[in-house]
Image (cartoon, rainbow, N blue to C red; front, side, top):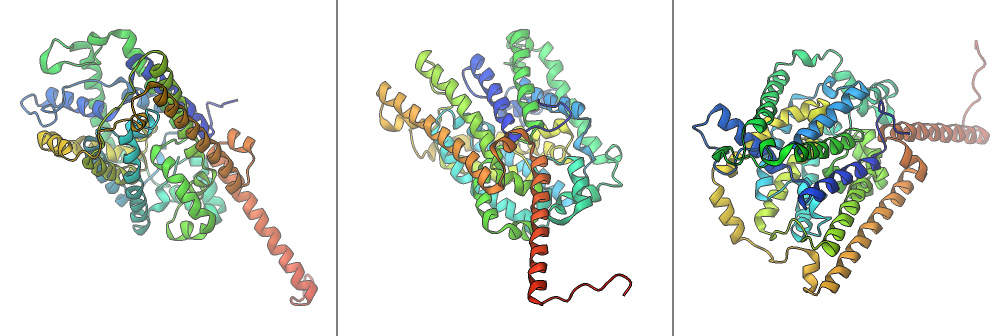
Length: 494
């Protein structure tokens, strides 16, 4: 049974996010899109506070994005249910600066790539988008380089799926392979988030930001010129507004209960290979915490994201084959898209989360997400202020006119359907492979991986590790004693 008070197994987030994506696809015939919604809400705030300025609104009309609001609300509900806000964590100042810069660079990258990781990974891959597949080849190396940068800055230990207080206290108590997990507990002992002026100031900005969008949705409609809000209540009605809000809440709950994120999911296979052979390197050189190493070993993030991809792929195939709905997210791959992917690779790791995960972390109260938020808003400016330049450059750097994988094999409907099915079979294969590999690398059973949250697996893994290490030392001592290499212990009182 899933407990509202505890974290959930990673794979469940794939189901929740998959359900949210299908809910969105049913009404809009496309996967969830986020980053355009945030810049449109930024334009709304700009027009409310400074109507004579058009830094953001010259490129985007003011709007409200119910899914973003829903993700934040869903995560906030999880924090209330678990009775733990992650605002208790005091992060190093250099990580907060890195999170702000990461938010800025990531936001800019979303405009160049015409979508964030949610668009390309959670939506583009199920849609068989060639642009999203190409995007994948660039964002991963950039993410690894940022991972390396964080290790050189000696802050790799902050990269955790979830910063749960109980796990941090456990790591602080037992040390050993979980010593890095306990650093947050030590650093945060005298920290009071309510007295952190930077945190409070940004939270006030966030409250004004979201309330401006929500209140405006009751006031403005498509007939109001610049305030033509496509997703305002006056334009779409209460039914669709509530439905989109529920889409966000479902996704937010699923991610907040597990720590789901797109960036770590696609880094998992590569990092797990290194962990298989160089555990001490990742622990001592890169300072990756035990909970993160077990997360990568278990392949859980990879499993979760491929559950989501498989679910949405199935819905898209049904819509395409039986309801004549065109494959969504068709766009030409460009070299500018690759530049945007590189920016997002840096930003997602620097923020400790992709865009949708950062909204989830805002709801949970993470200070890294709070620090990244103003970076998000400012990061749009290099694009919106020179939007014509970037759009022309994107058109001039087109790599291919093929927008979807089935188009690579011609336009015969039967052939395209067969290619789509083969694509789905490949997804199933990767999903099965990830589960089997996770079982092999961790030594856990299928039942263990399916029924335990990541932090529970971590504690179980390292307790077993410590027990096995103790047994080996005891057997070595007995063997040496049998050979006469060790003297018998002196009697008590000697």
